[in-house]
Amino acid sequence: MNNNTTKILNIEFYNRSFKSFCELIEKRTEERENTFVVTANPEIAVNAQNDRKFMNIVKSADFVVPDGIGIVKGAKMLDLPMKERISGYDIFLEMLKWGNQNNKSAYFVGSKPEVIIKLRNKVAEQYPNLTILGMKDGYFKNDIKLVKSIQKSKPDMVFMALGSPKQEEFINKYRKVSNSLWIGLGGSFDVLSGNVKRAPKFWIKHHIEWLYRLIKQPSRIGRMMAIPKFLRLVKKQKRL
Image (cartoon, rainbow, N blue to C red; front, side):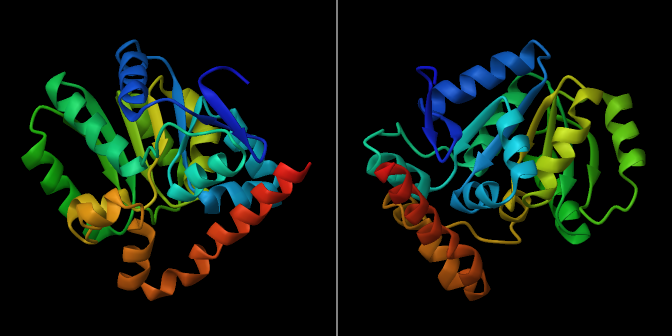
């Protein structure tokens, strides 16, 4: 384990501040260094325990960030304090801002067709100096056509909102076609487009954003069960 990571359930989580992380990936992106980021919440961590192939994909990432208060609590249980939660959505906003300030380019893949339309308008309005090299919804059937488009356009950043594990599998398979920042962002397109409302600051500050999302989307209850499963696995690790 290096000084910048904390190992939980055999996954090395980046363990410095959000600011430090963003500065690091901005530098790598500026230098066109191929970078794969996994924004791992408890659900992703649990799935990796049950799927060796997926675990290997997660481990192949250049960075795995603790996207979920459950990860932070798990680290505390192991007496391995985590600096802070680093959410995929916050990384997304920071990189859009940085890209806009530095005239960078981006490719967006994922979500529903109607969300992508809203997202294009929102990005063009809020980040006018960021070049949109492509936007593709998550309902494509031909990987190769999309991959060739990314390869030809060579964006500085590739944002993928296909959901896990599909987004991580895609990045792992095709990241070499372009020396870009590749990052899986789950439902971030839905939030930025306005299709889904993010929790108010109070809920985020008090680490109960997950509860807000559950209240708004009760159908998420099955996915939320990953949190207690994750914490049980962490307790088991502590006993070893």
